[in-house]
Image (cartoon, rainbow, N blue to C red; front, top):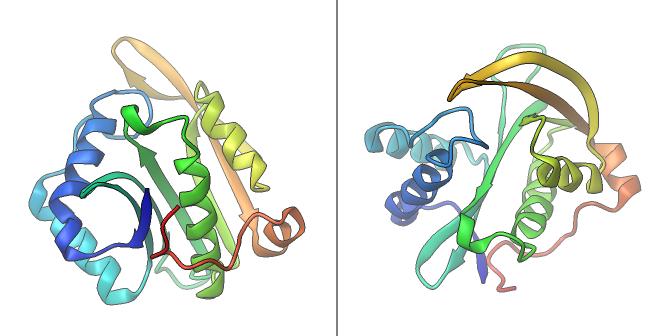
Amino acid sequence: MKYEYTSESRIDSFWQALDQVARERKYLMFLKGPEIGSTRAFIREIIQNNWTQIFAIDGNEVVGWCDILPYSREGITHVGHLGMGVTLAHRNKKIGTELMDRALTDAFHKGLERIELDVMASNDRAIALYQKFGFQKEGRRRKARFVDGTYEDIITMGLLNEEADQVGGHNSGSCAASA
């Protein structure tokens, strides 16, 4: 497995991974990948603004990602929102842990002071991963999602840079390195 920063050459492969995870209908807020054109614009904006997005690559395919994008509104530009996913065939191989480690390191080195995320309350494995890195549960939005006849609560979680340092949650490794 190798890990690298986002690039335009990986857009189609990223979209396929994103679409695959979204179609599981359990983990992401959307139920299929966005239009490829909007995905291209999204990746180009990340590259242009030097925001954080790390890909896990198996062979030549993106099999996981973690991005942390800063808010643009005045007063909250020190805060980033984390999104991530790993394709079904590549779960339980520590890919999420490695992606999270590299993305947090990059985002905090770029000056973000707080990272926040939303996670489905039923996603115990993801919640455990986030807690491993020091994320704290900060709230619960009850019945915030309704898919396939089922309501789902959404947990909001947050991590401050100084808390991550105490947990030892991020390293100083290169994102281009193999693992």
